[in-house]
Length: 91
Image (cartoon, rainbow, N blue to C red):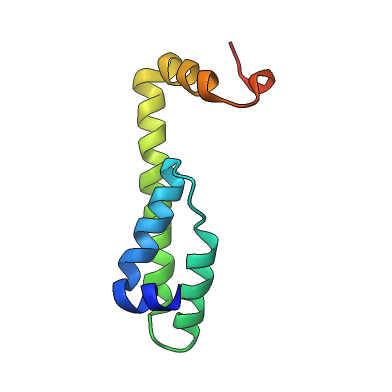
């Protein structure tokens, strides 16, 4: 993780958090912890790490909100069709 953060910098933080919020099965927490460690050492500005993570969360959640507003029933049916737990789906 350290080498990736050194190579790609804050773009990795933004991309990783955005991918997680959009539903990709990637964990964002290890990237955020590593970026926080770099920020604590002074390699990255703390506010930049926090602002990029927050922006990625807002963009990802906003995208799901817009998709839900426009295609709500179809998206819900699709997600229920691929869900492993059919008991938690709302018909």
